[in-house]
Image (cartoon, rainbow, N blue to C red; front, top):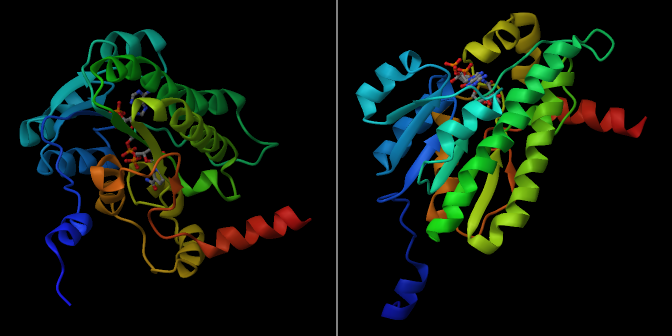
Length: 266
Ligand SMILES: NC(=O)c1ccc[n+]([C@@H]2O[C@H](COP(=O)([O-])OP(=O)(O)OC[C@H]3O[C@@H](n4cnc5c(N)ncnc54)[C@H](OP(=O)(O)O)[C@@H]3O)[C@@H](O)[C@H]2O)c1
C-alpha cells in the first residue's frame, strides 16, 4: 500500500523552527539556561538572555548573538521594568536558587523566603509582565518553567526548594488553564540532578549522590543539554497540543518515589 498525498501531509512532522519568534530565557548565565539559549538560537529563535548582571551574560551573548537583559527575580520593580516592554513569543523561566539542605525543624525561614521569592514568585512575576504583550500580539506563544523532580517526590533536606518548585508546578497548571484561550501553552520540565554549580555542593558528595545514582534508571546524572532539549521541544510547534504538563524530562528516580510512597502510606 502506498501513502496518498493527503495521508503524507497528515503525518508530516511539525517543524521545531522558531523563525520570527523572540524567547526570553531567565537564568541564562547558569548551566541549564545557557544550554537552552544555545539550542534555541540553533533552532532559529531570537533569544533574550537574562540574569542579574550583564557581565555574567557577556560571553554567552557574544557567542550566540542573544540579546542580554539584566533583572533580579526577587524584585517586582526590576522584573516589570525589564520585561513589560519586550515583544515576546515565548518565555523560559530557568532562573533559580537552591537554598539550603535542611529538615523542617532546622530550616532557616529567611532562606525559605528567598527560595520561594526567586523560584516561584519571581517566575510568576515574569509571566505576569510577559503575557500582556504576548496576548496583544495575537500570535499565541509558549512558556516553559524549569521546575524539578523535587516538586513531585519527598527528597531529604529539600523542604524549601521542593516547596518552591511545587508552587511553580501549580503556577504552570493554572497559567495553562488561563492562557489556553490565547493559544499560549504553559508547561514545565522537572529534571533530576544536573551537576551544575547549584547541585554539586550536595549531590556531588559520594555518600549522598552514590546511592541515589544507583537507583537512577539510566545510571547517570543529567547533562544541561538533556534538560535543554525537552525545553526546546515543549516550546516548539511539535508540542502544540501539550499544555499544563509537568514532565519528568530527565530520568525519574525510583528510590525517591519509593520513599515518597512509604511516607504517604504512613
Ligand atoms: N542543577 C540541577 O540539578 C537542577 C535540577 C532540577 C532543576 N534545576 C533548576 O534549573 C534551573 C537552572 O539551574 P542551574 O543548575 O542551571 O543553576 P545555576 O547554574 O546555578 O544557574 C542559576 C541561574 O539563576 C540565576 N539567578 C539566581 N538568582 C537570581 C536572581 N535573584 N535574579 C535573577 N536570576 C537569578 C543565576 O543568575 P546570576 O548570574 O544572576 O546568578 C543563574 O543564571 C533552576 O531553576 C534550578 O532550580 C536544576
